[in-house]
Length: 298
Image (cartoon, rainbow, N blue to C red):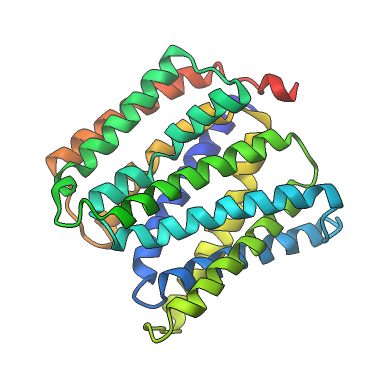
């Protein structure tokens, strides 16, 4: 893949991920969080299975693929549980910071497990991205629920689960069955979420209308099926640690989208954080000229 195309693809993915956060916020009044997350994953997996069928590939995984499907499904479930539950159990700042640390965890795990190294520019981009998130979330760090231990661990789980999924996909190596594996890990990962919803969300508001259906359709098809398949394909061919640094752009796009959809104003600390993250992105743009296929995949 040519460098401009790679960079444009990463920007598109981060933009979609940012829209997902806004869509989740808009959909929670209609659907309980665990049911919401489970249906999103299940729909995404079904859509990808339809793609597998369209490509005339076997719908059922081969024996050696099941272990990857299981473990990636487990980490994806952890991610969704943390993503959908943490904002309501701790301060918004803590949820925002810890829930957006997957690039940091991915870089650390990639260095330990995959022996990936980052350039000085990429390391500076990593530090700048973390600093930008801190600036953006600073006022909420001292909210009344800031020390909610459950929410803290859930937010960390969201980042840690996403990072673990990234490393597992990379460690698995290149395969022509990546879409099938992506589909089944989403389907299997949705079952624990739906089961937990059945036992813990009885009696909670559930409103099925065109708005709720539209939000779920966007999250399932675009925000899950499309993004998961494309992201896993990219991970197979490029260094996962370096690619993950682009995800620091999610809060930047998210603030802009929330400002338009929910009319949320931007404050000085948020503008400063955006500036720092854009600086980190500039470093990545410069360094992206040096992105090469991972030595593991040569």
